[in-house]
Length: 405
Image (cartoon, rainbow, N blue to C red):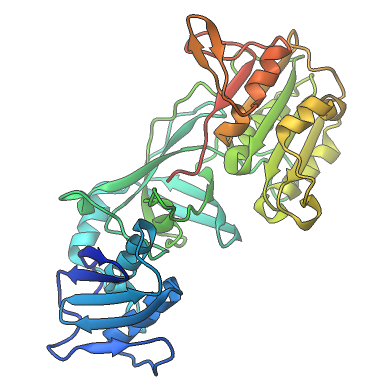
């Protein structure tokens, strides 16, 4: 117990056979249908998990190292992966007490991890603000830059998805780049200093999709304060305040956790006593997807040149009247909130989040080729703004920050 089960799946119409690398029952098989009285043994526990994961499943038969699962409908790739994940994780979660750690896992953690998860602010079940304390001090970095977080593939997942791993990948780490976020004020409402011992990140738990099985965040959301992980010591990226003059107006536009690097840059601008206007617009699905609203409210009250605007797309009042960031630009509301025109001569715009919102073009010999769906880059280009491209710095800056892992 305590280790992943290796699973091979063979779907055959409505029935799928899952072969495992260890026996779950003896030579007397166990058959279970929904509504059967559940036992506390592994096959009944497994059947209950499968029924909970997929309501289409109507029969489970476990015999030794083979699990036969029947659905009301034929199997598709997503359903196979979900069932395989349930079977693979059975012994990690099975039993009333935590599965014992193995010496091998501890060895891998000692060899690979270099930081501690020092604080978790769980805004909701799928959205965390975390602070990571590195074992060794890190060099100062610029607001807006990013680094890497990682956990081993040997760590348990918070979902029932099944990782398809290459040979020996179970001893490697799942990595993902994250822009550094920032809690902008302390408990008294004062701006935090620019470089603190802890590094903050704004993390959403990514759920398995039909094509992608996220590797890192389902493992991260199994962690608690004091647990170990890996954090890169190299902070990099061109999504910074380079080139911004003290009197320039600045517009930050983001979706979801794309707000993270904007927070760090806003805090830096306010520490500098920036003289231009600062507008921060965040678009999310629900109000509950906003984890920094209280801090921004304090800043808005304290700094007259700063504005924080949020819009949602899936609250009941949005039905039939969804408004996106692109709509705020075309309607002129961005200029109203900024209190000044979108003048490319004295305005910088920072974009972070959904690539469809950003609408990054392709640079061709004939000019810029924009996506079919209207994005902010095209809107600003038509207003005379210049988009960053390679080493050429414009006044539209972007970070394609998206939840693919």
